Amino acid sequence: MLDQELNAPKEGAVTPVRLTKRQNILQAFKYLLFTASAGLIQVASFTLLNETFHWGYWLSYFIALTLSVVYNFTINRKFTFKSAKNVPLAMMQIFLYYVVFTPLSIWWGEALTRAGWNYYVVLIGTMVINFITEFSVYRFIVFRNHMYTNKEGQEEIAKMQAEEL
Image (cartoon, rainbow, N blue to C red; front, top):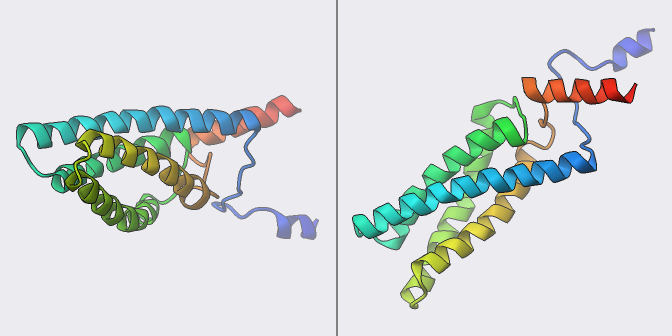
């Protein structure tokens, strides 16, 4: 009895969830859809800033990327990863990813557009690279041990466990 009490998870402790194959596929699909909607926000804001205000590539890209990241983080945290993880901590981890990604993507974006590449070809290519790398950061670093910890996620886990019985 004492051994069971010592090994029991502490209240508020996070127990990593093992996702089923179906859940992994659904998670990737949700991420694709939500990130595509963030991509629309990024392209629309980039187009507005670049075409209407005639701002240069890097400034238009930076503002559009920032808007997209805030939206993408918020929606994917709640619906894709179903996480109740400390928001400031999770945002700090994503911020650190962007401390690396943003200067690199601005650098290659400026270099390619100055070399004559179409702004939108560069933007879409950069968005694809961002999609793949950001999903990996969310899935394997930021929310690795914090998936299905919000109310909806806990309800889904309870439902799955009840079906197993």
